[in-house]
Length: 432
Image (cartoon, rainbow, N blue to C red):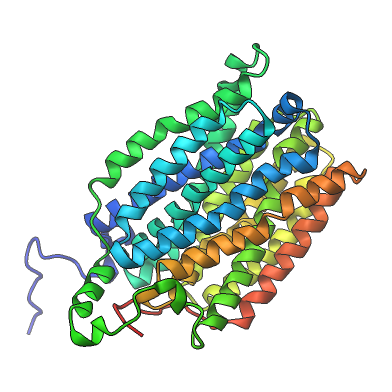
């Protein structure tokens, strides 16, 4: 007997649809809200890397003190990550995300009015609080919205927002900075002033985003007698006996990732400017490589490689990219090095959002990843001044960066294997 034909207009099975059609409009809105917010965040932070030389001239500070402007931002991310993460577990993911972007946009803008190094240092510290808060709440919102089978992919796509922001910072430096730099001491300030503009669009996008369905399901449980008996402060929970080793190991892994990234990226524009090269072509290559790499490796980590295998391979390929990235003899080979370092050295980040979310139960999925990410940022914060110090003491910048990048990527690969494979874990509204 012949098989009956499928009814016209009947929906195709999910497995036969392209992946992007397996994602609902609500899930896409959650992604775009956080993605655009992370672009703005990355723009506001990374613009600093392009104007370090100008800030040193304006306030007569050495490279180590200039590097500390990045360090204090990274250290204060921990404050924002803990506060916003705790609030996200208590009141939902969306509100802390909105407040955080308002906060960091304001202090990025005010940085341009600094009249001393001390004032600028203070504004960058306050900026870091909002930066940490935006990621702790927004990342969890996206991961909890999206399907399990696509979590690695969205993890890589989400991290790609950082590199789009870095790319926009490079473009702004190339095309907007020269319009203001003819007036002494104004060019670098204008780079901070324009950082507030994209935030308004982000706030509009976020007004359409719904709360995390996993968090909402948990609130239903908390209305029961068993739920009311649970601890209310999620920060305490991640240091209890059953979760403390998760917190330590996850922080160590992301700390190694942070050390790698800030060794790769923070002083790279200075490396290019010191050698008399235009920053834009190389940073376009680096960031396009990173955007593609994080998405590719995040997707690949859903297969047999898993999160651990994908991180290991891309970290080792990042180490292999160092000679081309910093020591190649020609512009073409340097550009190839920038592309491969982006794809591999920064490709490790494609697995990071999914991995940290998968390590924690729903009750602490705001503050757990928020703490780990931003305590890790504090670890990574040592790299900008450390490399600056080596440079001040006479070591060529390329050599200092080579040592830091190589060690950080090797630690990234090794530390992943001290924790479990998390690929495919369900993020249900569990309460343990």
